[in-house]
Length: 109
Image 1 (cartoon, rainbow, N blue to C red):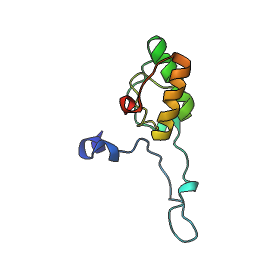
Image 2 (image 1 turned 30 degrees about the vertical axis):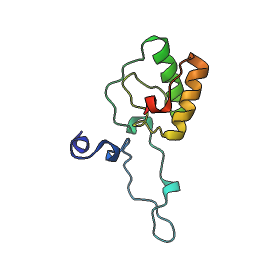
Image 3 (image 1 turned 45 degrees about the horizontal axis):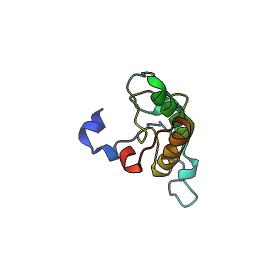
């Protein structure tokens, strides 16, 4: 909440993972491949509220599958949970197949 009040949205981290030390390569640079993936509870979220209705439920199931999460609530934000433009395209394709809902990428963004 503090960072969100001080920084633009795109600069606020979606997840916080405490580390004793940063993994480094032999050259002393940050080894990004060795960083652990954030656990489900590492993401800053509001209290969970279950999806309502068939479309929200289908959308939450697709998000959970694409993002590798256990559950997605109705107030969660796709990009804050780790989504990106390539996953967004897959999301729209799956939404069209499963729920018959057609959205443009611009509408999602």
